[in-house]
Amino acid sequence: MPWEARVIVGIGIDLVEIERVARLIERHGERALKRLFTDEERRYATRRAEPARHFAGRFAAKEAAFKALAADSAARQMSWRELEVFGAPDGRPSLRLHGVAAAAAARLGATRAWVTITHDSNSAAAVVVLERTTLDAPE
Image (tube, rainbow, N blue to C red; front, side, top):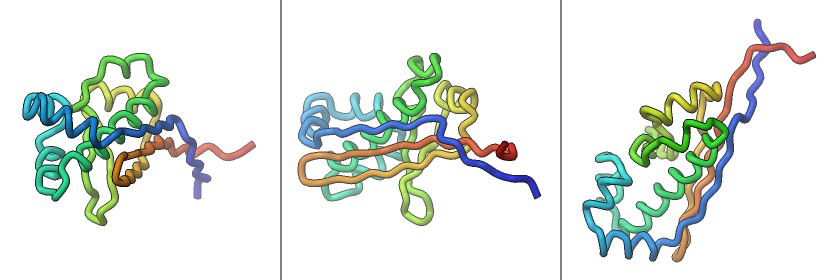
């Protein structure tokens, strides 16, 4: 049986003020939401009692993912909608990458993304860890 190792290839963290997101939504409405979030992300957040809180959490996760992918020079070309935060069947936040973001993750060898999001009354924070699984035996 081959030996399996997990290696961190990227890590990112971000903190977003919920009030700032609320002001963005108030000023720019659907135009801003469509630019930053996928249809699924918008549906998720708008069904919640405090949509700005959930948009802030998802935006923090997108920023954290961007930072985790930043080791790849092409990552700067990705759009916000290429980083999609969704709920796994067990309720954990998960990350789905598209386009340039998916290609950047592939170049880094990332095979899994770990995502955590937290909120308080003022802020939302997220951490993203990108992991690569290798079958190399330790020396």
